[in-house]
Image (cartoon, rainbow over all chains, first blue to last red; front, side):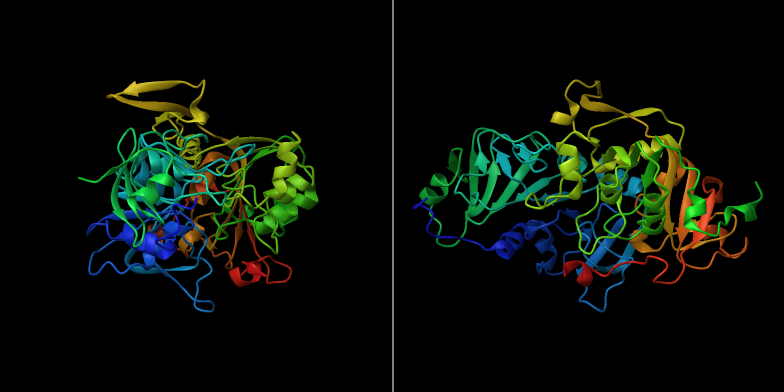
Length: 217
Length: 246
């Protein structure tokens, strides 16, 4: 993997870049892990409603120890605050929001993303059990599915692939992927490079990717 | 049954009749709404071959509170129906995993929204429904799908339960419930899906009429048994995240 000497963005920078895509008025669901970091991003005066699977609609920043309300958590179990205009609903109503297509974007982590927009994030190779949570509902029903993940595994294997090797979460739904190397959009047979992180060359990104890259028009 | 008879003096008494082979739904999501006291009583009561419905199999946090994972370890569970049968972090191994891998306990992995809706359907007298969730995945293999208005949907069946264990903030003696903030989660739909709903209540159980009828989250019609949680250490309250992290 000598081609990828530039590490590119760190996790917060990946989240920051993707959060810049959020539009004013969007209803956004952030998955656990790196996606949660999108809520730290300064996106100016754009008004975003953060939706959590457990029916906490309109949550705000995580509260420091001592200030938290133990009855209030987001989907990742973090003790969050509520923004003005927040509402609490039950789980079936929360997923009614999801299933009826009212989530403008869901941002999730993943193990693999394929060139055709498939992605895998609920089961690792060889495991009997899996962790689906709300991922399949969100992936099937949100208006947009964005993925944030490290471009390569710890062993240096690519995570952006022609086809997913792991069991998929949903098919053909991913439209935008942020990795440490840049911003990529599945095109069907490869990925279009929307942007490269500072210091990352096209050749280096291609060498780290398991599908053909094309320059973004 | 008179409405005052819904108040029961102890958790042990409230769950004493649960037979082997019962199906029980457990409310709660990442802490709030989790019926720790009822679960602890069930560990002592010892009913076996249970089918347990919950968001997760438990056991992901230290120190542990009474959870599904403990019922599994106690040899009481035949099957779990959950949205997570593995930890969210793949490097974490749940107490449940060992029993699942050895075949001692069966599991049905269900997307979280489908789980909530299967419970809601059971409580609403709807036997089955179609959903777009999980279409095209391993979970849909060999199952009935149908194309409606050009989109493919998966058939899902209602999930009725014998019992639901839930935790509420406030209750009146008629069984009307209020949940506080994220405590609500699965609790109201589980209450509708179960024949017998057992509630651990955080505040003193109030006389009928003390709660504003406009502010009830679950009607007492769905609720059969109420137990007030005693003060700690006798009663189990919420653990703080910083204690979990130790």
